[in-house]
Length: 343
Image 1 (spheres, one colour):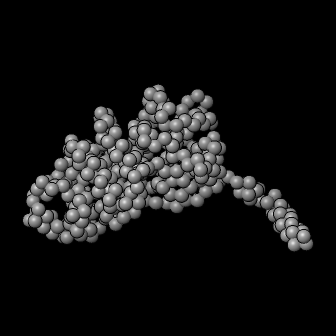
Image 2: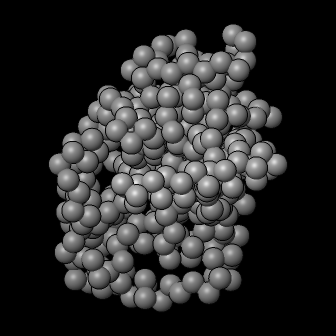
Image 3: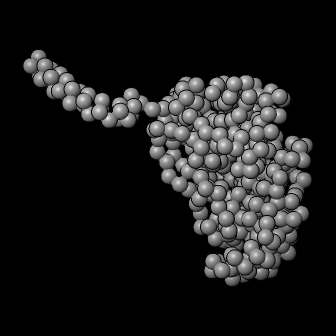
């Protein structure tokens, strides 16, 4: 196995086509969060995005996109990408120690790692995490029947809708907006709600506008908006690839926080799944109550880290040698302590 490391800006058209071929071969990676255009767009605004290109002989078989933290010697999660993975052909296995050595890093931290079963590592720590999704492939009627069986309450939502229509104006949902001003308003609300810094704001604005303006029918950014009369209540921006949506940002007008406008928008988005040409909506790995309420499926992931195997870990794996050296190390420590005291 050979591993080459390149910054995302050096991704050539040929490498991009090979990436798309690998992605198309493995159903686990048919998601906008694994499409090369997302990482290319992020790389325009974040120069520390790198790719580990994994080869068997001269054939590219896997790609690991990561954010390189040079100071801490870590590979970390890339902002605006909900999932991490070694994007590879089905049936491959990956030696994480070898890959980390080639990356010249000590560890790889991840928040929602997909297809983790095929990654081999002797050192690290992780825990399983459900990444919630809405699967509409069986139809809306069956989906809503399942959600109601979970005892999700809609009564307060119906009250909120009536109050909004009475006090502000008729509710209106635009499933696919063509208005950059809405995208910019969405970002302003998000920055205000979460007190994001200027660095994040600059990255978000540049990235989302780049993706929104892409002219690629196989990978698109879709902006939707919820109105009451002429007042914008909420908006969201998602990515789409081959019938799958990945949520990037959903936020709402702070003047109408108490009216559950974000949930109303989600309802409208679900109802428009045919016009928006999707069957699966990935809601991300961060657990929140509304995601649990509205999910009828989940994607298995893990969060945590893999790290380069240390000498101590290697010695422990050779049990007899570790047991033999441990008393010697302790004795050496005692001798050093006594000598230092005698001085």
